[in-house]
Length: 130
Image 1 (cartoon, rainbow, N blue to C red):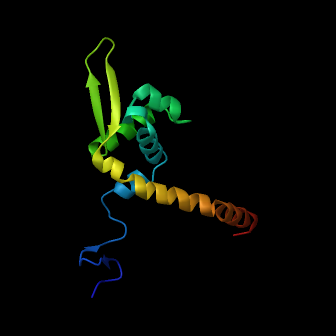
Image 2: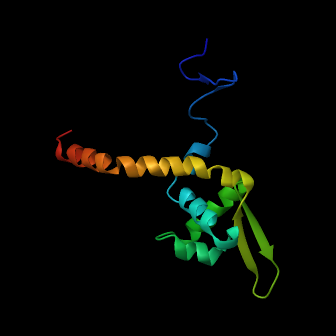
Image 3: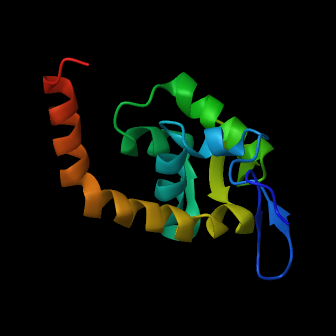
């Protein structure tokens, strides 16, 4: 019998719905999904740091740097360094990084389908005296 905090898949594997390894928090932060989306849409599948920064509205240089480092550390992004003058750096999704796109796309569709209801719930909540 599988406990309440885990689930058994059809192939007999067990997993907890929210792993405590930090990856859910990483994928759910403000910038990670946007960086992944922009890299997935890039011509040639690579983007320079400055191109990423200009395409992601509101991201600071520091936050983009931290996000890219974390994605690289997790194996979702690879950094290509070109020792030119001036040096050039490009970022690209790894195969594993590209593998998250279908899940992000599903989440994106769910958000767009439910956004009016979410916004109405927020307005109703904000009007209440809770």
